[in-house]
Image (cartoon, rainbow, N blue to C red; front, side, top):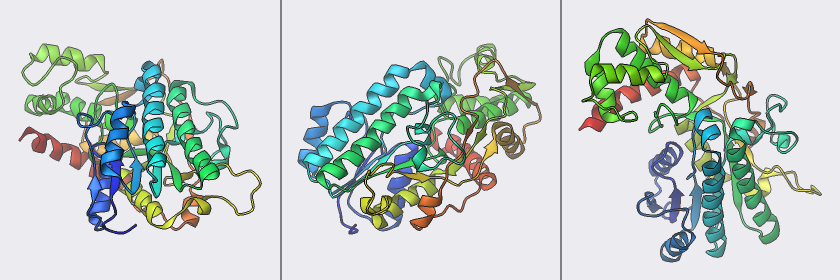
Length: 363
């Protein structure tokens, strides 16, 4: 890609899109396009068509999606499948109609079967049933990667699908109901630490920046304590879902962005499968670390980082989700990219960013 190429980053304000946007800026790309949801509703096919008609992007990075953790995925099943299918249909379709030179589609490793052999190779796709709690989201993402693959095979386009593992980093979502496991756990433990220390100034500062379901920094202490308690956050202990036994892989979002831009710059569809293959499939690329940590182990890292002195308990009546979900990253390594940030450093960076965000967002 030329540094002056017009690149549209769909979802440029989210965890994934903002990291990719910043990586492109850091590497000298000067003609980036991003639209907020208020400026462009990606569920509106006519609006997306009008946007492509006007802007005529040369490259597209599809990072926009309806995302969330296990609670959100299991609760809003229809929203997750419908909205993600619609976004993908609109953007990939208009990219084809407007002759986009290259498109990068971001999915998730939840596309793999619940009982997939570990670590999960790209070839594990569609070999067994999915994890029930996020099945609608996974099916939408499988449809997106197959759409890219199918356009490439029929029309000779250059659309590449990447499947990042669990991501975390700057601009993450810390909503106590809808966020992913690491940011949700970090905020819960941070608030439990503040309650344990009777640091009401810090609690109110947190709620001023990120109000929770009807309470804010001006609510009475009793109301705040009651609501936080409903999320398992108390003065003496914090409750987390499941047994703590599931193993998870985590990738720093800025590294995921670097891998995505690397692929846009150096990898084409023809590089994603063996030449001469009779049936071309599983052309997507896993993006991850190839390393894992238990949820309980992650909680210990966060407790140590935050300095929380209370107890952490696991509610075994709540679901664990998939017990293990480790990616095989050999395909990505063979294409020339490898991660650098390990989970211990990442948790430290994440908590420091979270604390700084409280003061920055108040201004």
